[in-house]
Image 1 (spheres, helix red, strand yellow):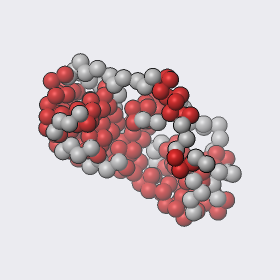
Image 2 (image 1 turned 90 degrees about the vertical axis):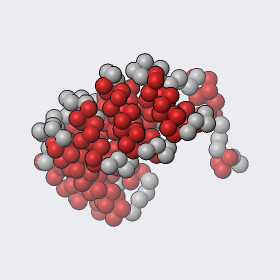
Image 3 (image 1 turned 90 degrees about the horizontal axis):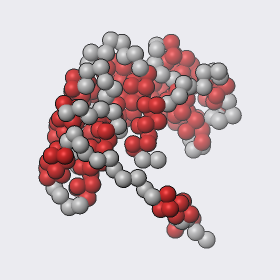
Image 4 (image 1 turned 135 degrees about the vertical axis):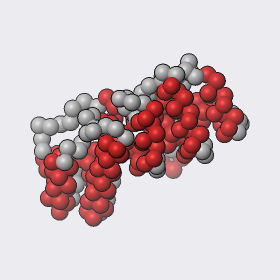
Amino acid sequence: MNLRCGILLVLTAAAPLAAQGPRQRLAGHVPPATLAVLDSIVQDAAGAGLPTEPLIQKALEGGAKGEAPARIVSAVAASAAQLRSARALLTSAGESPPSDPREVSAVAAALSRGVSPQLVGSLSAALPGEPTGPALHAVADLVGHGFAEDSSVELMVEGARLGLRGLRFLDVAAAAVQELQRGRSHSAALASVRVLLPHLPAPPRAAPAAVSRARRVQPSHERP
């Protein structure tokens, strides 16, 4: 799953499976010894008004990977701490309190990718009343490809000023990375993309046949 699809799922996720409590959701999927403490972490987060689905998914992920009980608990507790930090950052940036749990989740995910807390305030100021998650992830993607954080933020702020919103910020980041891969320098890649704003084309989708072929090809280490 690419980054654009991942953010789309965060921003458009359906309501959590609220018919079941955390313990029921996790039973049989995580070590039994972790159930009580995981349930406590999730219930504490719910009581604090934090989104709980990311915590449940983190626990399920650890269980599916066969992680040790202590590692699963530590990972879920760390995710809860990131959610608290994300909400605090959004509140300090002017959302009092943040009303959309999906936005809190998106900001927490961006923080986990190494986005600095200062970016939340910068992008919230550039996008008053708008979700900042996609822009934060776009900056994180650019920084991960060697672009300077300040320049990456400036590009997103310029896009916001020209009317870009939501997942379009991810298109901006993808276009800059593509220019870099074509051999341009980081500064030239950003300049090239800036000229195209706000009418930057969305990245092309992979052809169905290509996707089908990719699914059929076994990685070399799995071949007999």
